[in-house]
Image (cartoon, rainbow, N blue to C red; front, side, top):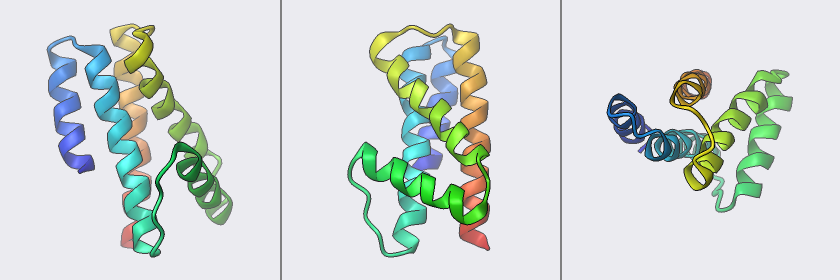
Length: 110
């Protein structure tokens, strides 16, 4: 699902729809976290579950960047409801989400 959300998010950004794009990029980030958890036979259902698992990954890998990037994804989720971010800021955060997804995809490969 995260690839689908990334593609949809990119298309929405190209149209200038930053609020809808924000939610797609948040969804992509959440889905990759759920995929990594599923590889460990864990099911994440709430935002708290997502954050606890992301924090666990951070500690396991000793990589604080993971929680920072996931936090930027969370700001996109907030933007979906509040429409408070500029299009440029959403684009920057979308790039951060792509980096986050890449890190977690590499984790699943390794």
